[in-house]
Length: 311
Ligand SMILES: NC(=O)c1ccc[n+]([C@@H]2O[C@H](COP(=O)([O-])OP(=O)(O)OC[C@H]3O[C@@H](n4cnc5c(N)ncnc54)[C@H](OP(=O)(O)O)[C@@H]3O)[C@@H](O)[C@H]2O)c1
Image (cartoon, rainbow, N blue to C red; front, side):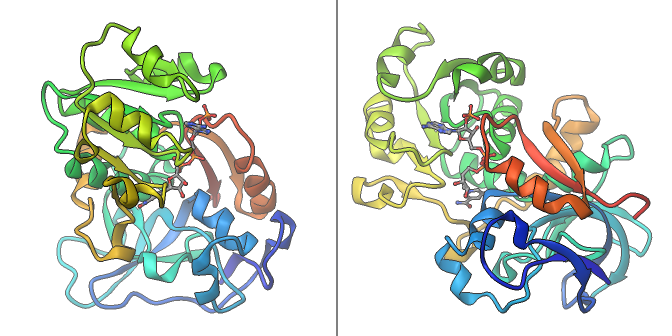
């Protein structure tokens, strides 16, 4: 099959379209002919050799953890999904990639609503799973006031919408350039960085019940101060969290229960017109190097996606 691959760690230019052995669906998995695949921060970190997990990669490696496509192979023990179904989801995270290719094996997925564009579906999997897992851990529900630090990115833009769908009120941080974007997602926008507690208190939104750190930019002490307790804060990206008593949710690497059920919920919300996956930019698969370079620049407005025309 054709796939984006890299044979050595390095800058985006190490990515090239080439041949790669076809993967096959294992137990509980499906294989899709890919129509779109997301580009995520973890893909950039692995390609650059910056992630500790890079040590586990056998090169050459195919990046990408999210994909949408048409099922063409169904593994043992899979029920409710058949060859020809249009689905979106994500690879088994322990494989650290495999989605930026002609075929990808998904470990969790849901049916793609017919009206959901391939680009949105292809970039949704781990953002929806991660946001759902974090909102579950924080017990976000009707009436919760939630602060999301890093609301304009792939995970944050999803978390804002899913929290609002649960009946929460959301305050979302973004760069000055992203204030209107965060507001369009449905959150009360505020700029991130030094002085955040004072700005949040100045919004007159009442007490902050819960805080989700998506950015990992060092704001945990301020988020704890705003909510009043470390137990009301979860971080997805700051490894100093546990030292402060803040839960660090690292997903299935840590063996904790995931937010996979969130995919079906997000698809249902999409069909009701209550959820969109913001796609900042889509690139053809052959331009994966450009997509990775673009994804390394801010400001972020949702996801970067690779498309496979015609699938
Ligand atoms: N633990 C997990 O299971 C898990 C899963 C997925 C992702 N992650 C991690 O979560 C992080 C975010 O992922 P993502 O896909 O949402 O990334 P992304 O799309 O690149 O978005 C990052 C966001 O962080 C914001 N940001 C930048 N500097 C900031 C600061 N100083 N304070 C607050 N926010 C700031 C950016 O806002 P502007 O664009 O407005 O500058 C941007 O919206 C990454 O580190 C990723 O590796 C963890």
